[in-house]
Image 1: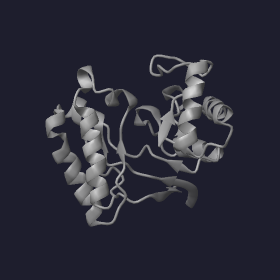
Image 2: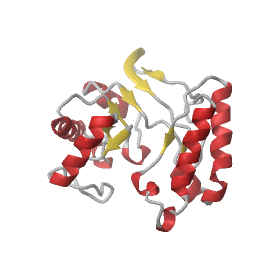
Image 3: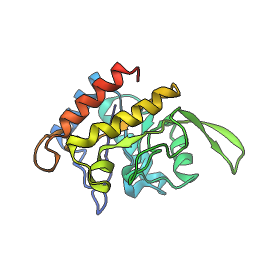
Length: 200
């Protein structure tokens, strides 16, 4: 599943312009064989008009409705972020997780519908919590790729023990296997193989 940033270029949103023919072609090819969702920009958080513009941009490129999202920088302002997504008929959000640590931010590893406490109603937006992000290990916890799998295995085992859904978060630059991300592509492959072998 891929989440694509189509915001307006800014301090916290450094994305390629949606006007780029090569970028549009890449998005279309991704959407041909994988699920794609919107990666709402930092600038769109708290700005429903900007959010609607970004969702519309993605729908215009892939020629179909968009139902999934993950917020840039994991920015959630409750309840507004989720209410804004619901207004645009987004059905699934994958933002619920930690940046500086791994584990279960929502206390569980099973999708659940967002309950709006102010309105006292269960909404149509399903939250899919993720358990671990590669940047957490690398940047916050300074864990080298050679030791990363012990952390992934521990989380995968915990999720399996309760029949949950293991969701990890990876960024496109961590897959290049060069420079600061040397060795992390193997971690990703090993993680996928371990999760598959353990029923996740």
